[in-house]
Image (cartoon, rainbow, N blue to C red; front, side):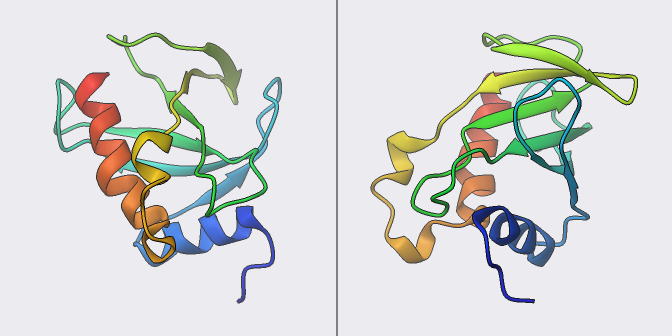
Length: 128
């Protein structure tokens, strides 16, 4: 399948990295999420897995990366959360987490979900 939209491109890239991906538009939330089960490799939650939603309201991926990270059933956080919502009986914490500080300097060929997960998600979990 050839990606036609930025959202489809994100979903295809995550699937290509071995993730089971669910495309979801939660109630009471402003945009769609790519949901994956994410095994945390760093920080105080190292060794645990969480359902993570990667928000893609931006329509210019890969030039502009996903800005929002949503985490289900996260007990607490050391960084400020933007908001929260409930979806299918599960509480989600929402974080405004743009990776533009490094993304803007990446060559176009490296602007992908692999770079996003390796650099940005690692940093996010190291701080949360």
